[in-house]
View 1: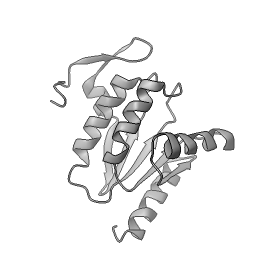
View 2: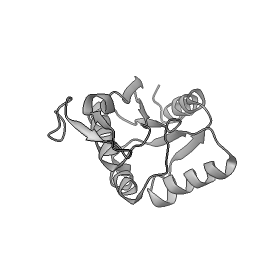
View 3: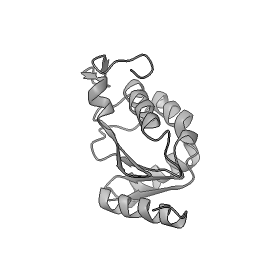
View 4: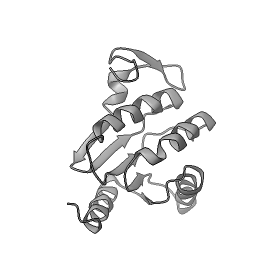
Length: 148
């Protein structure tokens, strides 16, 4: 149980569809030592994101110099102000670098870079077209830090 929520507790997404906390938590996983993957859910909202981030914090609690890959390929909408607060509040809780996956135009990538860096305060970030590119960057960041 995390934050008082059991796996079978339900949270409604932005579209009003119920999701179990277990389903949400399954979207966070350690890919390899020091590299965490978060997969954004379609129609996510602040409550869904908070459950995902709380679980992610548990997963990386003992990791040193963690890199987070955030896969936004299934995201269906931009974060609203409540989601941005969750992101901003948790920005300092995660690792040394955030690698975001969002296959899109250069303009969308520039907006994401601005949102992560200036709005959320995540200055060490990168934007990638594929999860493979993000994973390669995560490994490179860890190597530069003397981790592998």
